[in-house]
Amino acid sequence: MVNGEIGGVSTFLSLPKKGRLFNTVKSIRAMGEFFENVARYPKYLITIIIGVFASALQPLIRRSANPITAVSLIGALVSGGITLYFLLHAMAYPTAFS
Image (cartoon, rainbow, N blue to C red; front, top):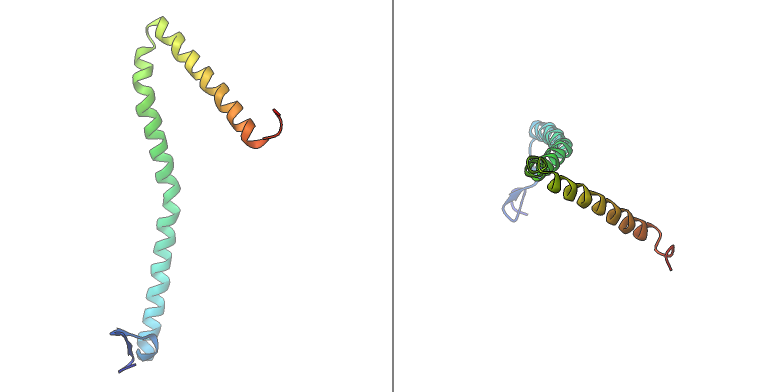
């Protein structure tokens, strides 16, 4: 350790007392900003999910004016729901069907 440095990086102990307090306050502020950013992630995630669903459903809604397409879309949704139900049921209760 030369002049309070380890590998060219100034150590905490080599700072004057005023500098230590300033850096501690600065660190606390930085942590507060970090947690504010982390708290925003759920909003971003929800926004992205809604955007993906809206982009996927918009063309399907436009095509539902044709009765044959509307029936096939309803059938696909029901089939997907049933598949999802059985998949989640098998994952939650693996011995129920054996």
